[in-house]
Length: 141
Image (cartoon, rainbow, N blue to C red; front, side):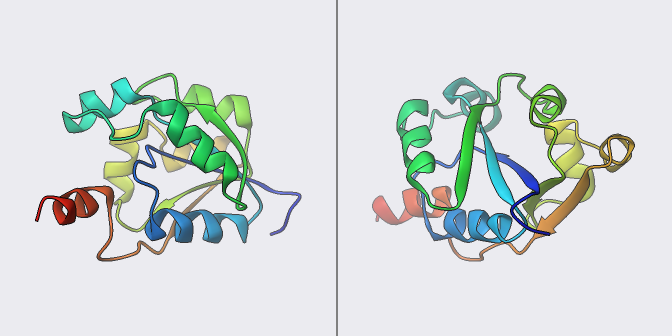
């Protein structure tokens, strides 16, 4: 692949850390990275807590990351299909932290639906030992 390809990935990206950097770097190896950033309300519904950093702060950090080409708001909750249709990427990328079934439940992006659009779904290596939850735990010690 290369820079003529568009790679879509999504998430909350709270407390930006090395796991986020590695995901975005791996995405950038496949093409130009567009991040669908979850709004604060989605994180609150999904995890029961608001992100530490507000949407605007998380967006600014992502835009400053050299691996990110663009950031847009994920506005459709658990249905990422409208956002994917806006971007029309060549690749949708997530990490091996997700199973195919769990990823489809979380995003409504099934491999079958993506295939009908000619979009490849890839699972990139998950960085073990670091997460926003882990950082929060470390700060409370």
